[in-house]
Amino acid sequence: MDLSIISTYRCNSHCSMCNIWKSPTLPSEEISLAVLEKIPGGFDNLNITGGEPTLREDLMDIVDILHPKARKLEISTNGLNPQKLEPIIKKFPDIKIRFSLDGQGITSDKIRGERDGYNRKVPGLLRLKELGGKDLGLAITIQDDNAGDLVELFQFCQKHHLELATSALHNGFQFHKSDNIPYDRLKIARNIENLITAQLQTWNIKNWFRAYLNLGLIARVLGQDRLIPCTAAVDFLFIDPWSDVYACNVRPDLRIGNLIDQTWEEITTGELMKEIHQKVSDCTQNCWMVGSARTAMRNPHFTRLPKLSPLFWVLLNRFKVGIGLPIQFEKTIDYTHIYKDFNIVRRESYLNTRIKPVIEYKDQPHYQDKYENR
Image (tube, rainbow, N blue to C red; front, side, top):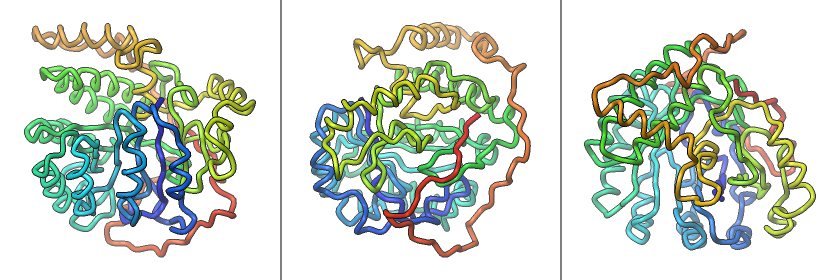
């Protein structure tokens, strides 16, 4: 099982596709070290995310607690405070760190509302590599404004021996936003095709299976059903900053319990969990994020191996690319069926705009919007 811990809703980025930064949590109300101690061990991937986790003054303490509890501990960060990650990398060089970079240069800065963000992140990540970091990379949220940068960004990562994680524009309660819709779904999908081809042209097995993950992103961008059914609440869970445990970070109705008031066993083995499993089985959301896709691809009996359908697709198309044949995307993706959007809201860049955040307190109602992905 994978677990993501949303350590805070405070954030020093001002992204156009995420409103976390407008509703920060109060530091004294965020998930505590004592609560984190209650989390059991044995996770495959445990992700410390946000908001921006480097804004937690106790981040090193959090890492000390969680590192023994997972095969791979990850920090998802905007990369604006790389100096705060240096002592962590020195102590735990195997930790997985991903810097959010949404395109080349000013493209990323505009999307993320970060002044000179690109020029701060790239040297910061390379510095962590110099310090001995073994699992470092970039993460991009693919959308209309940056889809054309995908192959170039992938090539940059290849050159510097970095990983590239991808997701597509989507909605979820974690982002406090419900109007993220692509402007041109087909154009984005074609750009993802180019990335998939580039990944399959390498000799890196990880890249081959990331190509399948990106194939799923094409289906998601076009508004089609998932390639593989979701396994939320079975293969992954989320914990929000107030210690509430959820099946995923999209549907706030899939709340399972609270780690302040309950033990992990009470939350994950109670009667409510059975109801959540049924709701996930009936879910019609079109989510395909790294957390929900990676876990769905795993073989249920041998979790370090993939299921047969992604394995066959990867082997077949790696062979085709290797002998110079094109990938026949239309055999998996129905390009005649593209979801038609109405009332598309244009995303606003906050690069040169500042809005005063309003603290969201623990005792307030949370996640009132309806979060749809199609």
